[in-house]
Image 1 (cartoon, rainbow, N blue to C red):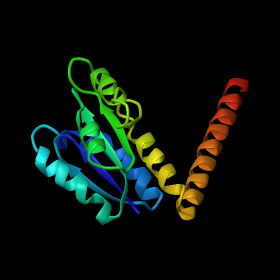
Image 2: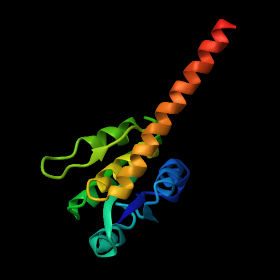
Image 3: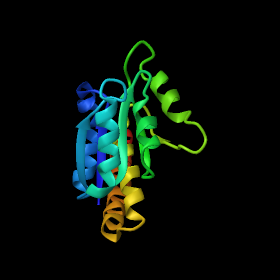
Length: 163
């Protein structure tokens, strides 16, 4: 099972590093492409339509400004699509967020926060974990590690404040 990460522009790649790290940590295979809904529409649609045959279970789509990429992908697949708004342009990603989250009825796109590729990857993993117990176990471990980190940093804070 794998995830397809599609960015609207290669300039978005650094903002996807968090997603790459999460997917690698969880042992989830992924593909990554730079395909534009506007500049390479035919290639984008072709890639999405062939994805199921390649074993793609979830799409993470990163786009800024008008952010049509997540909707275009969702229009051409029945696989879950997660939209990742990218902070760009004069509105710093607010336009992308609204564009992605306001999909028309019947063509949903799950949407995470601006530049929050880690959450996009975790959401993709949670979708895959519904039918993959190995990924589910790794997610349990990830959550446990997050909890332990917060407990540890709180203990350090309390010690600092007392001493």
